[in-house]
Amino acid sequence: MSSLLCSLATTSTISLLAIPSSSSSSSYSSSLVLYPKPKARNGSTKAARPFRSATARRNDDQNQNSSQENKLDRRNMLIGLGGLYSAANLGSNTLESSAAPIPPPDLSTCRPNLGPPVPYSCCPPTNTTIVDFTLPVNPPMRTRPAAHLASAEYMARYNRAVQLMKNLPANDPCSFMQQSHVHCAYCNGAYFYPAAQGLNRGEIQVHGNWLFFPFHRWYLYFHERILGNLIGDPTFALPYWNWDSPYGMYTPYMYTDGRTYPALFNERRRQEIYTRPVNLATGGSSTMTPEQIANNNCTVMYNEMIRTATTLESFMGAPYPRGNAVPNGPGTSERGSHNAVHNWCGDPRQPAQEDMGNFYSAGRDPIFYGHHSNVDRMWTIWRQGRPNNQRDFTDTDYLNTQFLFYDENRRLVRVRVADCLDNARLGYQFQTNGVFVTWTDCRPFARVRGRRAARISDAPKLETLEFPLKLDKVVKVRIPRPRKLRTSEEKEKEVELLLIEDVEVDIGEFAKFNVFVYEEEDDFDDLNKAEYLGTFSHVPHKHDTPMKIKAQERLELNALLEDLDVEGDEEILITLVPLAGDITIGGIKITYAPSSA
Ligand code: C2O
Image 1 (cartoon, rainbow, N blue to C red):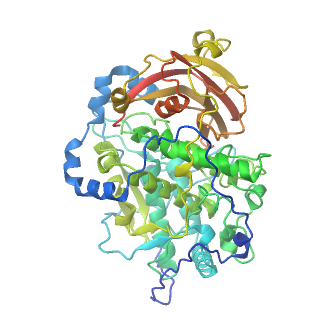
Image 2 (cartoon, rainbow, N blue to C red):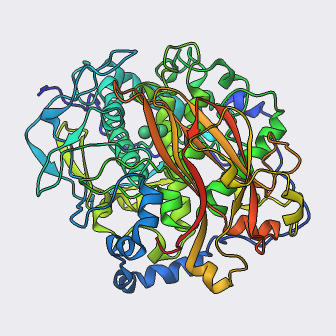
């Protein structure tokens, strides 16, 4: 182990983070056109899952203890539901009754020399002394500023911290290089957990499953602590790129001015990110106007945060217990805005869309941390919108999953998912002053309401399509609904799901398609309508094998069917619109799953 201390600071002065209110201090962002909130059209205004009031949330907090008794054993539920549910949601992985939480990686078996096409290694320095994480007692509260509102003083401080991190020797676990390797190691086939208790050795993967939010929260937690330590400021907090708001959808200034903030700049980025707003709908270039992009972004956010994310599994991703093959069932936020921003920032001029466009290299771009700080904020906002006993999986396979990270003192720390559920307990929060969460008002309206059974008769029936089906053009299909006119009680209990099974893509290629229901105008660029259901996307991760990867796509239909007023239809018209990549789908069907999971 290196004997260097992470802290190079000569002063222990605690400078309090000054957060400007709504006015921006940077010349760049003050010249931005600020888009008004997308206007609502007439029609249904009922919220799918209204976010809960502060009072309701307080009451929930007071009921915290009783919520413990509502624990559901996920495995029993799955067994009770038979093969249909597990096969549908976990692909070929059958849950074993002896499943257990994923243990931390075995660093001694970390696989170096990964690739192709680009050879890379991302194993950390080894260390046999592991300490268990303990939650800080009364930590100083760190407030993460919205990047577009950050002061020049803050930007200079963040730049200095990252510069100090970049100056550390490459084998120092606190160095920027090693920090970027953390992401690579956890998602590119480097890490395995050992076989034990009759359960197989397994690969560790933190994307496409319920570890997505917890892993990235812990990763940023340690990254932030190391940066704070390097500048001697325990209140230092990472910025968040507020891409979910029309006010924050341009690339924040601090990442764009390489002369003033060289440590935050990166050559390997898509050049459009400096002149165009982030496109959450396509994740790529487009000819849309900034207004159209803002409107689409708002619907994308509403959809992935509220309308199609009423259950834990839909939002968080597929369960991933020990001993099973890695599931690939990303949640709405991961496969939506999260993946879109990765591809948006990745450089098409590089062999594998480095840096942000590929998981092995994403952590090398400082913008990664601002992006994930906002992803983390989305988790916080989503949890706050739910009753206390529905915020987190209660399965111990989830809560006791463990990861390893180096802390600011270069100790190798073992953490549990259970300790990161509440960001305030980790000592940080997100700036809310001057930040507008506009998408909660973006429930889209239907272009056409009412039963349309007669109008879809020219679209092919499901049984006439041959699977696996190549998605090399727009595909329309009529999908039968096993149940219609469900009562509100039934809808409360079970969510109606459109499952797109065995979505096969090249592991090293960005892939994306959008899904519409009863889209009769074939206007696929405009997502600002109730007919837009959601998206599938895949961000490349490099592995040597296999070259193909399969994912399961789970899309909640309840609110959309209400919005379109088609709950009585026996079949619905689905349109799949490919945007990028070589995609094949194995099947498509409607099924039902418990709302409580
Ligand atoms: Cu681990 Cu945004 O990726």
